[in-house]
Length: 135
Image (cartoon, rainbow, N blue to C red):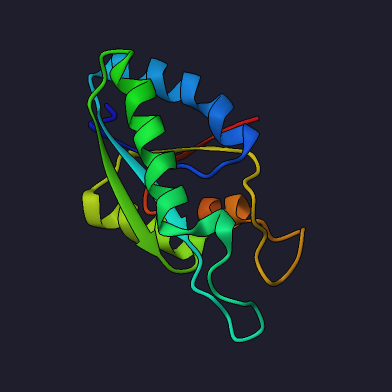
């Protein structure tokens, strides 16, 4: 049913909590798991080199997630992309043929439009496949 599961991750508590649901779904359906971290492109107003999104931080985040799933007997592929999170998540889901996106209800960032238009809301509206939101 869910041959390929995409799990966009960041450093949020919600992403960590969603990992249990990802583990259950992937094990139940024998799914391919793809972990994705999206680094927002620096804007003209924001200084580049934010330590929260450095390549080293992202690489460590992805490696820690891969290790977590490996401990559960799940091999995960990792992708690091740059762009607007919601659009990039949906583009990657389309590119890899994801059957399901699983994500926490709230990540670290909000879109420029404000708190009422979160990355999660945009992914729900733009996704090429079902989205499972973990509260």
